[in-house]
Length: 568
Figure 1 (tube, one colour):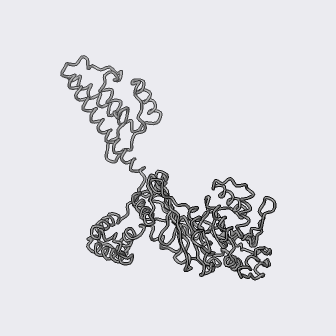
Figure 2 (cartoon, rainbow, N blue to C red; figure 1 turned 45 degrees about the vertical axis):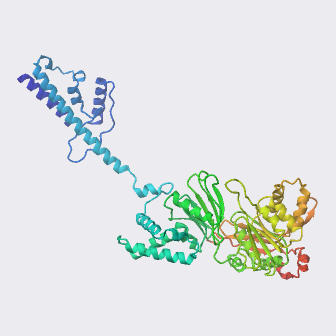
C-alpha cells in the first residue's frame, strides 16, 4: 500500500513538473515534445497556438483536445510513458483508486483548458469584430436605424387612425389638407411622453408631413432650387446633381416598400402604373418635373427613381444668357427665327438642356397663334393663352389602349394648329412631323437626340425608316432639306455647364448630300479657368443665312450686324 502511494506521489509530481516546465519551454523543446507526442499517438495533431491566458487562471498546455500529455498518458494506458509501473501487481482496490484519481485529474484539467479556450475565443472575437459604424460604411449603405424611427412610426400610425378617409377626400384643397395634417401632427406629438428638443420635434413633424403630403425623404431636395436632378439607387442611396456635379446625400427611405409606395404615389396621379409585369414607367410631377422609375426584377439592387427637376418659374432667354448657354446676339437671332415661322430642330445628348431650350424658343411664339404641344410626359410650360397640351399614353395591363406620339402628331393636323411643338421625336413620328412641316405648318419646333448638326440629319433619316415605308434615301433627304430650316445643337460640357454649340442653317441638296452652314459656333479657344469651368463663348461665323428672305415674308427683319464676327 505504501509502495503504491509513493508511486502515485511520484506520478503526480511528474505531472506538475511537466505543466510547470511547459510555461518556460523554448521553440526547440516544444517541437521535440510535439514530435514525441505524434510518435506515441499517430492520429494526433497540434490544435495550433495556445489561446491567450486570462488573468487569474492557471497556466495550461494544450495537446489534442486540450489535455496535457501527462494526463492523457495517465488516462490511457496504451499511450502511457514507457517508464515501468507496478499497477499490475497492486490489489484490485488500489487499481480502482488509481483510476478514480486519474479520471478526476483529467476532467479538471480538461474543464480548465476548455474554459481558457472559450474565454480567449470570446476576447479574440470581440477584438476583430467590426463596429457598427465601420460595417455600415463599407460597400452599399444599409438600413441604419435612426434615433427617432420608432417614434416616427408610432406617430404616423396614430395620425392615420385619427384622420383615416379624410386624407383621400377629393373635396379638400391641398392647402386645407396640409393644414389639417399639420394640426393633427401637432396634437399627436404633444400627447407623446418622449422628451424632445424643439428642433427634433420640428424635424420629426416635417418628415412625417412630407411622407403623408409629399414624397417622403425626397421632399427637401425637391424644394431645393439648387438641385437640378434627384437620383435614387435603392432605398438607402440617394444622389443629387448640383451645379452640374453629382453629390451623395444622407437621406434614405425606411426600406424598399417605402420607396415603392413613393413611386406608386407619383405614377398613380397621372393614371399610370408600375409593377412586376410593367417594371418601367415615365411620369411627371405636378410641376412638370420628369420622372423615370424602374423596379425589380429589372432593377437588381432595389427600385431606381430619377427625377429631373424643373424650376418653379420657367427659365427665360435672359436666364440662359446669364448662365452662358447662349449669347445676346444668338438669342435675338433665334427669337427672329421663331417669329419668322422657321422650322427649328433642337438637338443634343441626354441631359444637355434640350427641353429647357425648347421651352425658351416656344415662348417667342406670338400670343395670337394656336399652339398644340405633344409630349411623352407633359413638361413644357408655355405662357401663351391659346395652348392645347397632348400627352401620349402607354398600353394598359392587357396590352391595349396605347396612344403614341405618332398618333398624336397625325391627330394634331386636324386640330387647326398654327404651331406644332413636339417634346421629342424618337420613333416613326419623324415622318409625320416632316410631312406637317412640308404641308403648311411652318414654325414647328421639336427635339432630337444626336451628337451634332450632321448627325441630326442622319438621325432623322433613320427615324423615318422606322415608319416601315419603303422610301428611297434621296426622297427622305429631300423631305428633310425642305422641312428643316435651322438646327440648334446643345451640349453638356465636362464642367457640367450646358451650352449651345451650333446654330446651323440647313440649305439644300447638292447631289445626294444635304449642305449645312454654321451661323454661330461655340469657340472654346479661351480654355478653362482655375475652377475647371469653360470660358468659351458662342460667336458668329460671319455667314449670312439664305432663309432671311423667307423671314421677310413673315414681316420679320434681322439686324445684319448680328452676323458680324466679334474681334478676338
